[in-house]
Length: 514
Image 1 (tube, rainbow, N blue to C red):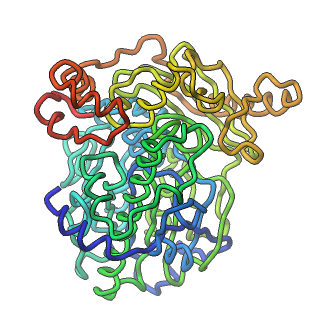
Image 2: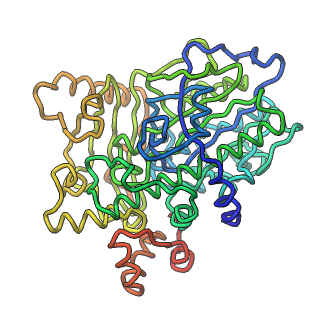
Image 3: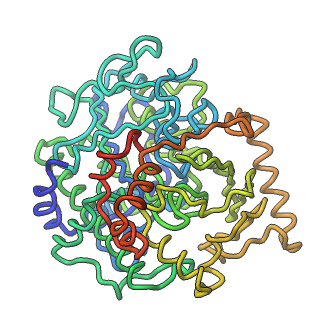
């Protein structure tokens, strides 16, 4: 993170806001009519580990004026879901335009040396075929924004044939006029848990105030939990400043009138019931699409969208071929967006935890089928121990009988086999309706969606159920063991709910990446 000082001092000066708006009946761009003969440049911004926790989504305490501006001038989507609540499976799905369970990429950080099976190819292959220059990262953001993190064999730069060549991108960090039309994918890492969180908060000109935030009902309201939540919002404000810098660069180069900018979260927030889980904070993410002349300003779309639909939308904008295997469909840049009847998501192996759950969102309800109900939500995962202060604080409160019924849900010894939630009346998913006879017809309908999906698609995560092998010698697992045995004072800080810098320990003691 060699540009940390530059970003903390400069980025935070740009207090702006995040928003996400959507377009109904925008003009079609199959022949790029909005830009005359020129194909549009496309910039895809992926903020790591954030839910729909932006000012324009109504999140209390946070200010995100840059993203607010994009939303006001573009489109905000309110019902965008990830096929996986974990980064690498979800990124794999977005790169291919197909749910990760259909091509064997469902387990976190798996198959890194295994080529994509035929006929699947990464999105950037099809963009190259359409004449695009593929660019990864930017000098303007923390850590240069070059994360790829796909569960199939890739190389950052170079050609791609899927047999001997596995390159996804053509160049790094900067686009020029000669690169047009270009596709630039940029990762915004600051919102991912990291050693920089405390520094971001300490250097913020106006840190988020603890008494201005609104915690979900399943969080214990303690000073430690509030401080962690506020720091998360501080990183969102920092990230918003980065978006401002990126937009300034686009405008200064005179390319803003011929560029579409897409902003999303790569999966849900890294906190209780968030990243890694099939609840709203884990799979529902913000999405903004901005593009002068193509995206109608200030539109909000509530229809169901999968993040894989972005892939098809980008190929459509580029005039590229949308392959037959792609289950995604364009949802912007077309006159008649193909919104979804339902969206499906999947949780599978995450580090040393073997679990298997599937979810369906449709008709204002969420259905979850837990194939391994014996695995609790709090399964003692090392990643959670190192990165989620609220878990430590609430475990102690639970041991002392001081959690409310809603706060204790995450710490139950087993999961139910089925879950059903009314997302309109119960947005925090606190009341499981699966056994309520009043909702028996809804339950049957949601089961039907899942059975329909299974009848039409392959699910490698269900095929290997009961025959899986997990790796326990992972970095977080090793570091937790070292901290408990050799650095008990640091472990006590974690148990007390403090944000602790663990990167140095990861480098020294972690043999495998998280």
